[in-house]
Amino acid sequence: MPADNLTTPPGTTSSDATPVVDTGPDPRRWLALAVIAVAQLMIVLDVSVVNIALPDAGIDLGISAANIQWVVTAYTLAFGGLLLLGGRIADFIGRKRAFLIGLAGFAGASALGGIAPNQELLFAARGLQGAFAALLAPAALSLLAVTFTDAKERARAFAVFGAISGGGAAIGLILGGVLTEYASWRWTLGINVPIAALTMVLAVVLVKESRATGDRRYDVPGVLLSTLGLVSLVYGFSKAAEEGVGWSDPVTLGLLAVAAVLLVSFVLYERRASHPLLPLRVVLDRIRGGSYLVFLLVGAGIFAIFLFLTFYFQQTLGYSPLESGFAFLPFSGGIIVGAGIVSQLLPRVGPRPLIIAGLALGVLGMLWLTQIESTSAYVTEVLPAEIAISFGMAAVFVPASSTALVGVAEHDAGIASAVLNTSQQVGGSLGLALLSTFYASAVTGHLADNPGEAPGEAFVHGYHVAFLWGAVFLAVALVIAAVLISAKKDDLPADAAMAV
Image 1 (cartoon, rainbow, N blue to C red):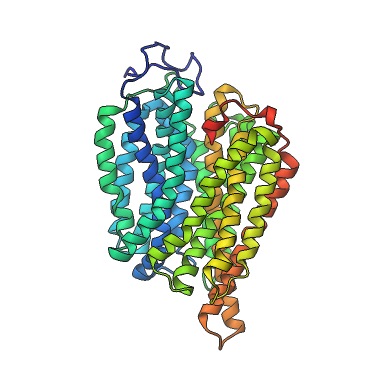
Image 2: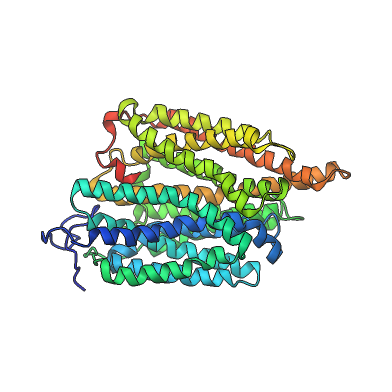
């Protein structure tokens, strides 16, 4: 099938892409941007919307404290594990086609989750959502890149796309609160169906097709080894949190052993694969590899904030879902404002000082959260920590997104950006599973040691343990950044803003 848009997509060469024919800019490109941005907004909304609904969903379906994290983890694990493959599929079958398939599948999975009668079907639906999001997200980015061929217009388009992503999280917090409080937690998933349907109709009319040609072989063994390995690892962490199981249980040890074998096999296979899912040259560079590790550890620490603070707000402080959404707004606002400030500072001071300062601020904020109590005041004891962490993470995300592309060859630029997103999503999955395990163990132990104490105090103790380990993750990321990320301001790629 010939491509309607014959512009060579970024990350390809003339030998594996359609011939370059200058047909001029697409007159409907800004309308196409609106359609693509709505799809991105839906993906971003889905994470924050569902977070606010977790307590209600857990009560309705009888999900345990150890298993509730799977509502988020199933999504992020499928999304992160299949993101690289999703990008390849979009290139080969056509970005518009992949975009439409991703929208349809995401809507169907959302509907399935919205009517789920039990936790098993809800977890499966969330995993399915993540799988289709892994196809939809890279297709959207690729369509954006090939639709806007002028450098200045492309920069403006990606700025709009980035603003939608940042603002979408804040919108999702409020929307999740409204839907959960005045309708049902099920509508936090069901709302995706009409949005996706309208977006599909508009995309058919406004978005042009494009695809790469040439060799279309997929690295199926690489996908299976990496995905099954990560699932085994996360499931092993989760089993350790279950009552009566623990870390020394044969099931836990078996899952962790299987994960180790599969992930080591993945690395060994990728070294000799002719068409690797993850070319190791991309991640073995010192600066780029350090950036990916930082994103992995930041994802592990930051995803936990939303899970545990959501329960703290609603179950400990007694906030309604809508009040919880507003309580998170300063965090989203801090990310947006901080990113604007850091973007101005990056060309002047370089990435390393900003990343180190940001991680230090994140550690400070996490440690601050370990002081919260069941009677804490939001304004004086929670809000300062939120602001510190949000500005700190802004100081990490912007420069680390740039250092992840330092020295990368042109044909590897797309995979380098995809690895960055994958690192954060996989880190979030592993962090949620691990911190949920620590949380559940801390709560159980506290209840056993203090039999006459109110359960609420045990929950708060569990939050302290989770936030402490979040601080540890960020501290390790700080050490890695200080040792490995040595890039200077002159080393940053010219198109770093696109990665951000």
